[in-house]
Image (cartoon, rainbow, N blue to C red; front, side, top):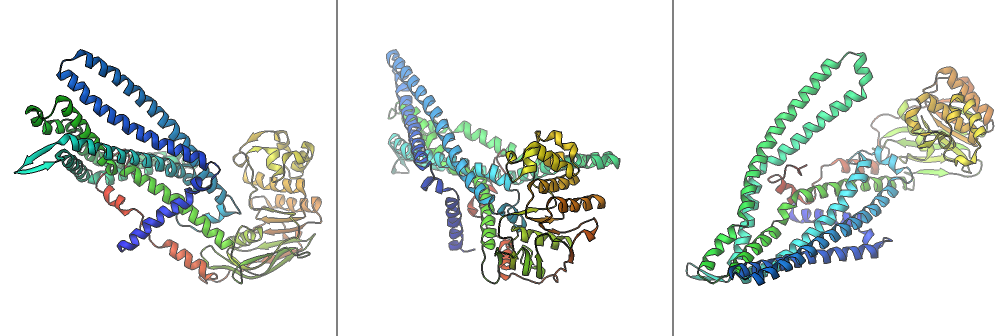
Length: 611
């Protein structure tokens, strides 16, 4: 990649981040409050620098007082120091409050935006189908958004502080350095040059000593994750493991997995010991080195004791400011990775939104004209990669009709999803009822957390149906034993079995009595007699409704007016060329933005921060 392309990629990364999160500052409802808090945070950073400067001047005054053995001046400096400490405490507390309020507000805005894009028009489902780096959306929204916003503020504030610190103390250190003669040359500001060299040398040595540490830390975390996965697998398969009497083999497998942690731990320990040994010496030398360098000037009388201590402190402040990039490498890398993960989810959402919004001959058109019923005309369905699943489907269901469509599971599922309006990959016409009286239920109904009554009435309000009507609907679906639990709130998705949830779907139909019913293998987990009873229930509670069941039905097929069989399209045939090209482009390897961070971290890292 050329330098220009690399710079373009980095610019695009920051541009995308601003597109994701910058609206909070530009047009969000709390933008003025956010700007005020950010201004306050900047002023607090300046206050911290001002206090550091005042402490530096106080150091000179204190040691000058000690040099003169003046008790009066010493007591005055004690009082000044108390004021500096009090101001530092107040500034530190205010800094935490302001920064955390701003971080939470920014995170709330970005989270609401991402969730709003994700949980809209079935995009949360569609983005899972296209593959690529869009897995684990819950982690991206809950954790990565937090890191992207919180770390951005931390890095911005620490950078502002480091810049202000450097600008302020370079001038102080330059003035305190005076002029020295080296090999006959008169050199001003030599302590500034030494501070730059000291910080650069320390960073370079730490970089070299830490080279194996990041790799060792990554290896250890991988081994830890493998061990945790083994424990989770043993828990999730507990019954199967017990029935197979496989505990001994599982113990051996877990012991082997833990042994690999020990090897990675040892490699990490070696890297940490080397880095810690250097860091200990570096930190111990930092306050002493400038004193050793400046002592000859103190001995000859060109520098007072207070000036000597002030020089040492200013030297430390300059080296601390210059060390900001190295000190924050781990945090920058983690921030970048989290931003990338959120941006990848947003990219996936935009892709499926664009593909769902296609128009023209290569798009699915929904026809809600009067009297068209439910079905499809000239419909071709593609997989998310653009290859054909089904082609030339013509289907029409009228009121009062019962139609069963069977076929290969993936193809049947895709047809159901297209008719339900959540599968945008295909072309042709989908026929839908003119009104909104269509109830679509897949293999299992969606059961929101809360009371059973709320789950049964969904998407309608629980208050729309009296308890006795709900109890009757449950009884009609063979779930009368659940009627006493209508007011109970729990996670019904976990509390009920699959067959019970499928019966609950028919109880919902009996309760709501829609004009059109679209089912996707909603009887597949029932016994043949039970499945037949559920179809018979539809004849009882919604005799005039049009019913289309797509997928496996174990019951008597004679209960349906018509029975159709799907024929899957030949494999490999590309139906949507643009979609296929987009998937190929998404699968191509991409260079990560900010490659300098990766390059540096391969040679430097902190054991507790490396990822």
